Figure 1 (cartoon, rainbow, N blue to C red):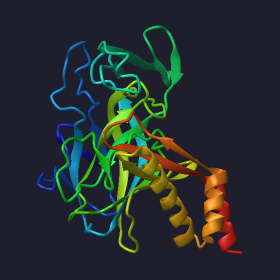
Figure 2 (cartoon, rainbow, N blue to C red; figure 1 turned 120 degrees about the vertical axis):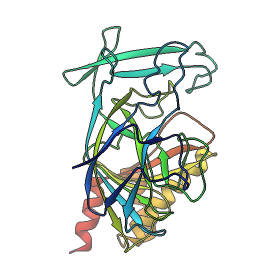
Figure 3 (cartoon, rainbow, N blue to C red; figure 1 turned 30 degrees about the horizontal axis):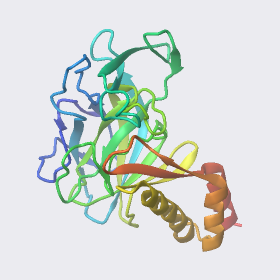
Figure 4 (spheres, rainbow, N blue to C red; figure 1 turned 90 degrees about the vertical axis):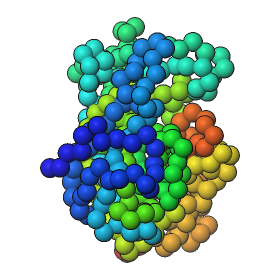
Length: 299
């Protein structure tokens, strides 16, 4: 299986970046990733690049207007230095209470027996997820902390192994980038980060030419999710709901009012991570409900 090392990284999405690897549609590969701070975990330390992501990966056959399907087969956190498996980082201006908690306070954690162990003795179950995944947009993004129709730093805790994400393709080859694994993450990442860690992501990429999408869609073990983003979180949430209703109407054949009611009864709208100039949100519909919709279509 092809392996993309973490030293093949970029600090942002830019169509001018040369591909770091080439793969075929339907190919599986292993992508090594940095943590969001590239190992600079001490008080006062700064990373070489904030949120560096591995790639871009050129997918043969992907053309603008297509959809790139990325299956997450396995997500493995890796400790790159002894005693440093995962980091939560508090700093001024970050998180929901960034004006109250202004002292730089890194919390370095260990991973033992599938548990994330904090220095104070608290142990939490690991639940590894992928924070960043994106196709390259037609125009360069300022940093890899951005999000948009291409995906980006969506910090969605549901993006675990066994999930599939569909991303619009904007440039030839899609130029896929990914990284920012979290050993564990809460909705909103209220303190500013998740349990940031390096790792390896096993994926399979496929080009879909039979449909188009405007924004990312995700199928997890438990939910179907529409992802949106915006400077106005409320409007971003409304668009995520519109996208869910449109999917149920156009892809599943539901009457619009039935689709809207189902979204209200079997769905949730949530903020993915701490407020930023552009914040990602998600509309989640329970798979159990979606599977009933599919069964009704065939009867």
